[in-house]
Length: 184
Picture 1 (cartoon, rainbow, N blue to C red):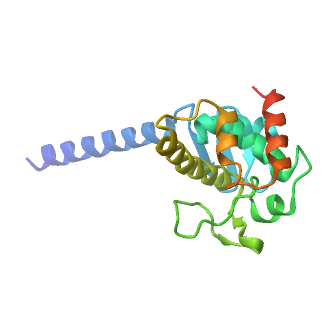
Picture 2 (picture 1 turned 120 degrees about the vertical axis):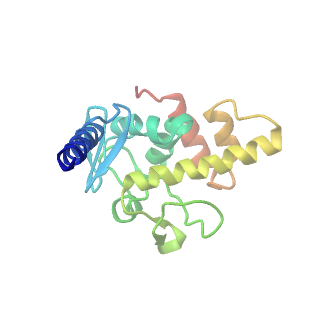
């Protein structure tokens, strides 16, 4: 009797450990995985402490930001600069898109408020997620005003203008970048 109980308990333990190993080994191909200071997605392996090139940002943003991935990259280029030309806030705050600290107004990944109320992030991917949260709020506001979702990035930029950024040059530049967007 003791032998049977011991055998059953041992078999259950072996099956459980096999299952746990199998579950931890199998990760979905389309998951963004952060381990330490590295982000892995599909075939990309990117440092969270170094700002990636726009093409790599766009690849990750398609998963992390979703519908507004293109807008994220375009605003990143306008606010922080193109590949290798990153602003002070991008380098020191992990803030690629000029996000302001929202306080208690919405969900955020920001750690704190920095100079001029710019949000400070742990790394660039947290900024990407924060942009997604911001866009969820903008989507809701757009739908409340017009009774439908925004058709595209152009319509959303026109809607965001004045609240996200008040300068006409910003709007002109972002629309130009959208028209010339070539990332895949």
